[in-house]
Structure formats: structure tokens, C-alpha cells
Image (tube, rainbow, N blue to C red; front, side):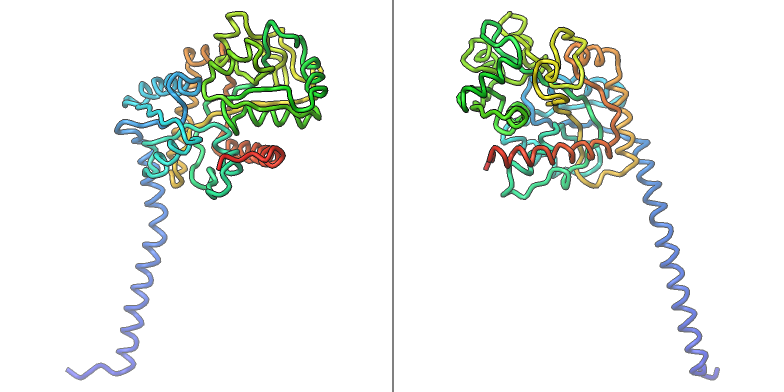
Length: 344
């Protein structure tokens, strides 16, 4: 058989090359569709084994109690065990480090508050850690407003009384919080800035001790939520002067807003709590978990507990959580600079 001519050999090579290119192009076009189908299928099947929720909050705390309630509802909804792992301490980094090492498959989620999302990067600058670059918010659990709390037996009957004393005291009036960089601390900086005052911050590790000291008059005041302060309040030792929210709370209709009580108009101090996942969770799975958490939070039993504590439910998508965290980040960055606050 005669050897193929150079032209025929050239045409054969070109034909083989075109076939290979066509195959590669087809595979490239099919890959996203296959990946999307796989992600969609994993979202439909999720979960097919137990799910772990890691929290930086201590057992018995308000966020921990909420997580356990929601976890119980999710367990029934998913027909899978939902485990709660408390890893408090280290400014939240113990829990963060445990969660950032796991696969982005939805089977390990991390509870974070808005301060973990928005304040940590400013409080730990040398670490170079930006929460939203490592984790994606998946679902919001609740938002809580904070109230100015003083001793029921003390001299402060209105917020105007407290602010007036702070202005006259020139940095000696004390307020407490549950930690440096906490909403109670940053909220104090925020009130100082808004009222042109300077006060002395005292950090506590134990919330019970904090409000016990406010109730006894050893501290002038502190920010408080209903669940964190209700024991001392019900004992008749605390007075709520004002709530830092747009309107009065139905649970405490006699407590004015900060603006109504003689403080700056529209003044707000609050914190929201979310579930987050390591970067890489598929959009389909993130949407499913978001919807399932919303169903759990809407359960009548959970809703009743939220109402008792003035916890606000929020119809936030993951994208809205990010937007709200970015808004808080700008506020916290300015407050951290103002107070020269650092946890390093």
C-alpha cells in the first residue's frame, strides 16, 4: 500500500486535533451543568448525617439557649441529630479555629454575632483576620436591642440625669460590660461620642456579677438585654432608663427610647446573631439551610421565647447579612479608633 502523501498526513493530524478540541470544549461546557446538578442534588439530600453547630458562647448564655432551641427544631425538620459544641474563650477564636478547618458542606456551622463579623478585624488588627473573608453567613437567628440599666436605688431617674452626671464627672463615671470589644463596651463608646461625655469602662467576665454590681450601685450603669439582666431586674435591683431602639419595646412599654429619654434622637445599640459556614458552601445548599432555619425560628415555641426576650426575627438573606455586617464594621472601626481599643 503506498505511503500517504504529506498533504493527507497533514489533514489527518488536523482532523484528530479538531476532534480533541471538540471533546475538550464539550467537557468544559458540560462541567458547570454537572457541578450545578451535583450541588442541587446535595442540597436536596441534605442532611443525611448529623449536623454540628459550634458556638463561641458559654452554655446557659442567651445565644446558646437560642441555638439549642433552633437546633432542636432543625433536628426534627431534618430527621437528623443536631449537636451543639460550646467553645467559648479567646475572643471567639477558639470556636472560629475549630470551624474554619472543616469542609464547606453544611455539616458544620458556626454561630457568630455581629461583633464577631464586624468588630474582630478591628480589635485584632495584627492577626489580619477578616471574618467575612473566611466565613459566609448562611442564616440569621435574631437581633436584640440593648437598654441603659442603672441601680433601682440609685440617683438616676432618667437618661438625662445620667448624661448630666457624666458630663460633670469628667471621665470618672463608670459603666460595665461583658468584655472589651463587646456590644456593651462599644455601645458605651458610641453613647460617649453621641453625648460629648467621657466615662470609665469596666469589663467583667461574668454577666451575673456585672448586673449585680450595677444593682448595688458599684457601677453607674451598663447596657443590658432582657434575658441577660432579667434575674436582677425581677429582684427589684435594676431600673431600665431607656432602650436604644427606634421605638419602645412591647415587653417594656413604659421604658422610653434613648431619644425620648433626653438622649440623641435615633440612637441605636443592638447585636444580631447568625449561623455561618466556611467559604465554599454551594449557593443551593446555603439557600436550603437559610430557608430551614427561618422555618425553625418561626416555630410558635421559639417565637414565644423570642417575644419574651424582645428578640427580633429578621427576613435577611445571606447577602443582606453581609450588607448589615459591613455597615456595623464601619461604625465599629471608628469606635475602636476613638477609644484606642485593642485585644492584642
